[in-house]
Length: 633
Image (tube, rainbow, N blue to C red):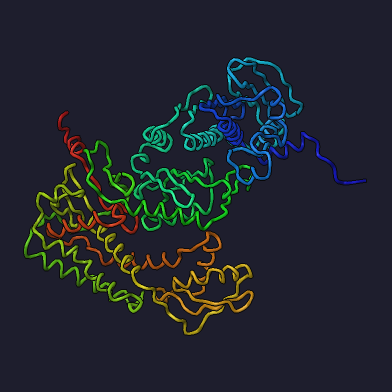
């Protein structure tokens, strides 16, 4: 006798349900995606007891005819693809043809649908105990009504794995939020146990879209984000990315969509992390709502039953594109004069293609040191002494760092430039003292120092407060990187070439990217099928463990298609040099020096935060100051 048996329909569908229906939120996702694919402009979702008791999804889409209803609840039946070519260029959200069959096998499912307002509507009912669908006439307007009751009633073992009602509803809420962010032209409503959670009308204009983003992600995110839009080589990315100073303690405000589909992808995550790595405070996570439009043929969405995971055919191209767009958006954010006085707790920034806003001082602020005092700056004698003192301090720091880096690896132009950074824009300090022209600048006219830590300045909007050490640290850091990038990267030959044992696949990858890594100063060659020998490393990183450096770089390349490991290590050294070379607390600055620092901030990339991600300045408007003293009340 044969031991292989054909599974019956009920058991096959329940096995499929194990892949598709993980929890009530899985059902909501499938039904709402079907509604959007049907061209709905309004989707209403009603939930009872976290979806365990009942899930109702109504839409005004194209609907289904009588003869289509039995097919809709059968396995491998769909209107979204016809052949292999369609599968290789998926343009819809759903396409497997298993969702409704899987749902009906573990619940009691009722579908009502009509293809037009005046025509005849029909319903179909089926449940896990009897898979035969029952079709009959009914009353219904154009669109589809999905009613799912008593989830897992016939599989009690699976029902035990469900969480509390509130937890299950939170997962459903997250699904609706993602759908609402992905499809601005569709209106969404959600209710739970008869109570309306929110109503989101269709959003057509940019203002309406940002309003919806604020409703879902919070108004603080909407106010402190940068609009992004860029196209190149068939790729388009748009959306909103939060300023680095608006960060999160966990990755709970990160939404990324590919062709309208919410996805989680390691290539995307790595590109975003790399774009933020130079400006984000340690242990913090960026926030963003971003959309990538790409030729459907260049992305494989048929990787996982839940369709959360995707695979890009050209991973390196996509990674580089995402990084370039976000990196450029961050570096272009600088203080700029706003057109009108801000009414909120934030002050406008500007970028090359958008306007953004600088956050008020966060909890990550510097504390004052003992013995510091309030100091009104004045011009003249102390200026030259302060400049000479700063230059001597920086030169001393450079000498101290001789043990960390080899100065011969740094071009002389960089070493000489570092010392001049301590002068706080000496070329500008020779100009006349702060005048009326300074007042009209984005960061205004310097007035005083507070506790030897902060610079107080006034502009047309009110009071500007600058953390002088954090600001100067960013200026020095950016100039160090810029000066270094203009020179060729020095290499350091190893006295004893180091041989490494690798797997065949690792060795193949290493051989493939050998030329690219040589440009970064990492020179090696393949010795055998499973071995390479390292001959040179970047001179700047000669103290690093050559084997660990190579393995880390190779791991990045194999995972993400490229590696920024050497650049990150180089930047860490520059960051340390800039931190110790920047103007210290309690140093008294003249007004000219303060104004020079403010002008440098206005010209420096990423000047809104220091190398460690802390904010460098904040704005208090006159309206905010008036409210502190109850003026006009």
